[in-house]
Image (cartoon, rainbow, N blue to C red; front, side, top):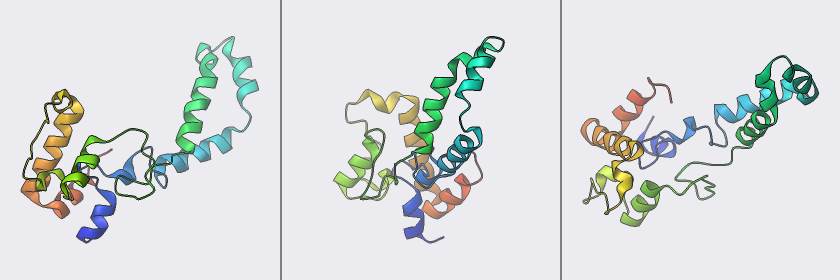
Length: 149
């Protein structure tokens, strides 16, 4: 896969957008839709089961989450039609600085005075970008394919 194709997958933070549960053409959306179809109108049966199997009392919450995943609408951080379910600091900042990945920015690693950089997500962002810088984007992408999301 060439650099341009990899950019369609890898966000500036180093995560593969296509493997995200919120990705519109992702496996999670497809599987959630299939599960909804297989379960059909299971709500009535779940109510009956909830008397003897307590976990079924939470059916409506499960169904709502399943519905959310079946309607995933994010096209990835680089898409013009991006419908991210949250505001990604890395994507916004990389665009502002005109770089493909955070490691390419002259200010990397930065924290912008933001405590986010000290969170597990911030640490993962830094680790991913250091690894991309050290290995190269293509090698990093191939390495990430070996790991689960």
